[in-house]
Length: 389
Image (cartoon, rainbow, N blue to C red; front, side, top):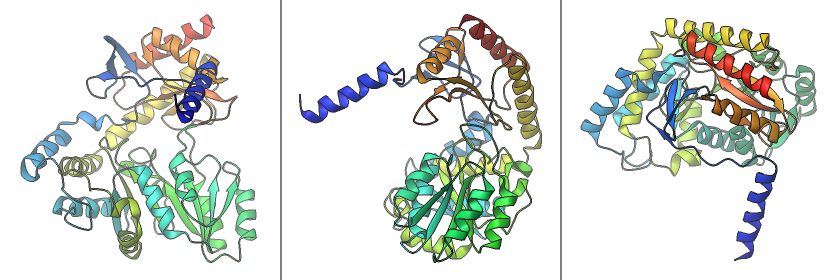
């Protein structure tokens, strides 16, 4: 066996010893509140399908019609023949939805952050990032030669200190998640914007878990806080509440044109399939009529969180449909997740290095499609597992 194979094998064995090893689950059927795994029907409490749009008839119909018209693929990168009229329409609708001059679509939310951050930041600039920002933001920053400063989670005093210390930099960019994916709390965006304006910095918000969740018709944290025109760059995904796949940046026309020429994930990856672009377009239309769906999502989240807390579980800083149950060590966390699975509830355990070593949690995500009976079933499963530990 080669040395590299020996090293990789030892790392995998170490993951198993620490209780962090997890094979991929292979599900039967599409995303929903109940999904089949190894012949068992399970209550699904880990899907990002917040509004249940993955199987919405309008999205499915749009995908079929686009495939019949354009074919299965786009055939090229965006800058050659890969920008079809359906991609252009999607970007115009996203800009209208987000209230910005323009929008640019990427293959995923991850590549959006990589493409935007690596393009706009140079060696004379500084990026100032919340310590709990998503891995895609962290990796996007790593691709730059910019100076880097990290402030403690939502600590505005540390953010202001970082802004003061970086006065000599050409550009200062403050980056934050809108909703933090592991804790389910919301960024203090008004305070961030106020500080950025005071110190002449740009504000960059990743709304992956806020799109379709916060703001009127799910327009995100900028809309939620009424900060239109004061947030310079809004990143979102098309793969969570939107129900399909992809990512985008909503910005001014100048930045869009710049990214078309500079963002490597866009320049060197084939564009979205016509079916994906059409489904995303249909989803934006559905979001425009989604008032009842979003209201149901928040009603379900409040109901579930209150019942989980009543059992004595620590749900951390959760204030959105992301409801973590803090357990502890990786081994304890994964054991608790397995106990829930035995009770018929799939809720993914999340451990180090995604979260702190002693802050492993089973992350529940509530959707608009969950019934009260299903949420009660999950709560009862939690009670049983708590008593079994």
